[in-house]
Amino acid sequence: MKVAYIGYDLSGVRTNSFFAGKNIQVTYFLRHSSVNPSYKPLNQTPILTDDLMISTEPSDRTVVENYYFDKIKNNYKFLESEIGSNAAVIESGAAEKAQANSSVVQSLQSIIDIQYDSKNKKVLIEIEKHGVEEFDFFLTEQHALLSLELEKKNIHLFSKKMKTPFVWTTFNYKVEYAKQIQFQMANSSFFIVIDSDREFTTDNWMHSQLQNDQLHVSSFQPYTQLMNPAFQKFASERIQDQLADKLKFIQIKSLEGVTLSTVDSGYKNASTLMKASTAIPNFSFWTDAQIEAYMQAHIIKKINKINLNRNLNAAPEVEL
Image (cartoon, rainbow, N blue to C red; front, side, top):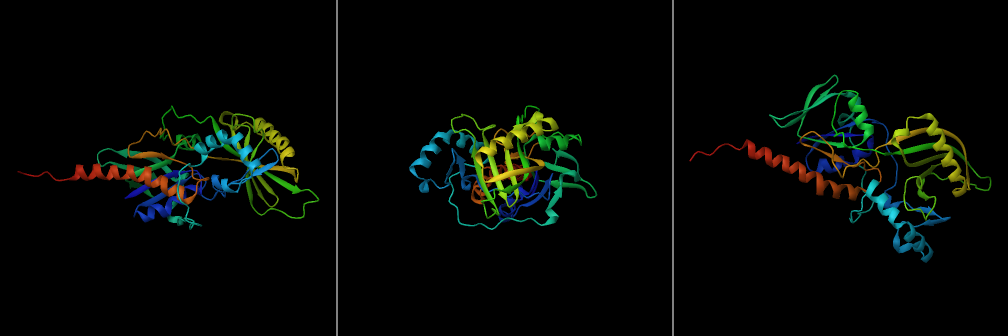
């Protein structure tokens, strides 16, 4: 069984060990094949709100932490449904990070065309300097960022009904610590809630990741404005103003760049047009156990159905 997997970055490669355990050969076609997100899983990321850091573990929360978490619980559940997984799975400690060798990770730009061979029931991908390769099944993150890249090649994988109103956008800043702070955080991730009384996450919840003198702030930004330099400047300045009140121990020195991601890839309402294909999440905020549970419950079921139908069609007629 051969599977093709279109994704935005290396977060999708975390599925490789699962496929290997099922004896499924997978080739990843990635828009950014050298970008490896370092987010902690959503359920392991603390939340800063009202000058209080809420623990990730419910049993460790104080009465005050529980009070403030109850205020933002609905927003948290919504965010969980968008970028994480609410699967109740038992974590087995530090799982080995999945790795895929370079031979099965290719650039999305290397794809020339994608077709479905209805006679042989195969997905055909024409690859630059390689020729046409056959696959039994096709997985893709369902997002406008990928659709745009493919449409440049006249490849239309998604229904026109697919909508991406907001895109997970990261503003990358260089910072310095307040003089009274005598250390730097090697890697600290947390969500910041600007106003715990607001009933929505957009422009209210931000993910913050401190890596020494680098601060990466991510949030949902309007898709239609993302390529507008004036909007990027406006959004960056607004974020800096919001952070000045929340993170008083650092000072933002400069904006180093803006990056985008397919976090929240709309996989629950699949809009893939090709047969033998389905949408798949971006797994940046998922635990390894959640990924495995999702793959087992949803993807393997679809792959097995494909195999069953092929076996039935291939069965020889029985003469009586």
